[in-house]
Amino acid sequence: MSDQSHKGQPTPSRKDAEAARRKAMKPPMSRKEQVQRERDARKQIRTRQQDALRSGEEKYLPLRDRGPIKRFARDYVDRRRLVAEYLLPILLLTFVLTLVRTMPIVQTIGTFGWLVATLVTAIEEFIVIRGLKKELGQRFPGQSTRGVTLYTILRTTQLRRFRLPAPQIERFGKLPDRY
Image (cartoon, rainbow, N blue to C red; front, side):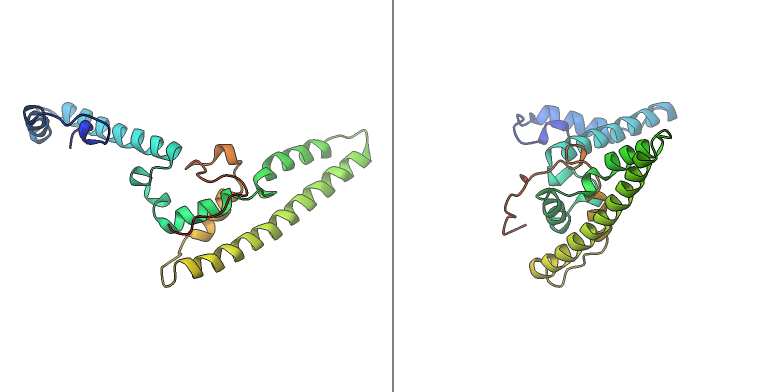
């Protein structure tokens, strides 16, 4: 298929479509040309996937992000504000605090902060996963939810602005009824 077969693009003329088909079917002249064609095809696929990750377009997402169950898991996480999302900056700050040698109280606060952040994150992850599994059981009965737990944990530990696919739901928004 040619690049022009997307919505919003003009339909290619028969002459152009046949020329593109013949070009795609034409055997490569040399190994170098074949490698170049394969490289261009991979680049085009990567570009489509990156655009889909930014826009949330399901059709071109990588396989690990496709499907209604994964989309529900993303929305379930994206509508919340979690401590786990800020875990890396918190741990970095507590690490810096533990390096202060002149004031032992600051080191103690840093160590205590690290412990509290880790504990709160673990409890929060447990609650989120338990709630997600309950919702998945109600919304997708009998369907395999293999891999969703790890997918969800990884998504909760990323800052919202850096998550890919990009969040499609507002914070504290209502989850759609259908996926």
